[in-house]
Amino acid sequence: MKPSELKDKSIDELVELEKSTARELWQSKFSNYSNQLDDTDKIRRLRRDVARVKTALTQKRSAGK
Image (cartoon, rainbow, N blue to C red; front, side, top):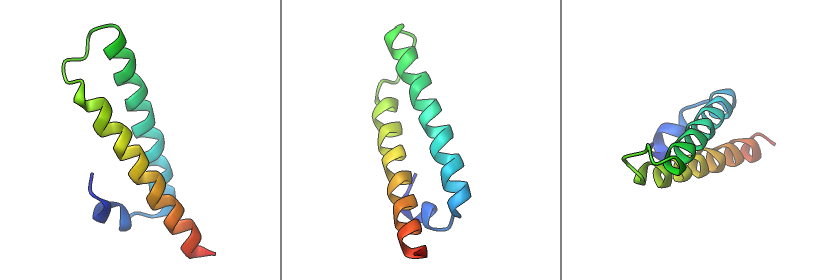
């Protein structure tokens, strides 16, 4: 996910995206602990995606004030 993709989304879309990405991260961590996850780099990518979404949310919220 690129930051330019996030700039076009509304605050509500970003909140929903954060929830879904965080849930996917949790599921991937659980799969990794039970040795069912083949692509362990997925956890790293998801963690960074969550951080990007949170950053975009903070920027949008501060710009709205």
